Length: 189
Image (cartoon, rainbow, N blue to C red; front, side):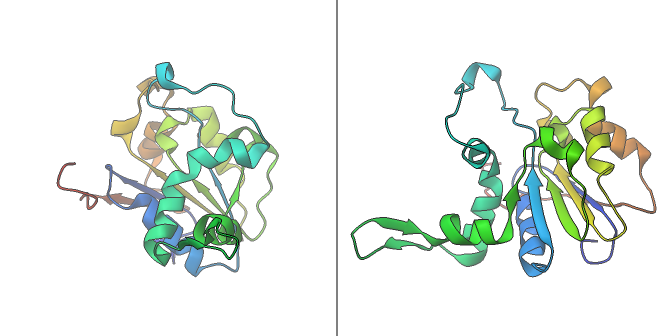
């Protein structure tokens, strides 16, 4: 589906490989720019850590951990020591920046995809309006990949779920749908 479809929706439970598969595709197809985004919504607002200092990338890095861990899986643990005795993480410092560009989900509306790849993670946390805004970024030369799991829709009501609305609109000639059935991360799941 990632190779042949114009756009792709990948769903599946925890540990099914949604982020890994979409990251591997982005890395293997690195002639396109890969923007990644997701709603900055946690499991429970009682555990939010509040204001984060720094620029946009600093604020978004904590939401990109699924993609970072996928790169560690694909390229191995590349943490090492530099000559000055400081540690250096090649995946985090070099590879992540080479393959991905973080974009704030609130900036999606102004994004025009040309020959780019837009990866929206945790789409189950998107409202109908936000999913519509993301889908409206597509061109004939771009590809949008969305990953999510309805079970993980923590604070989104079904009546406002962009993922649920999208699932009800499928099948559609412009979007392939893949539902991953098995979790591979751990038997604990």
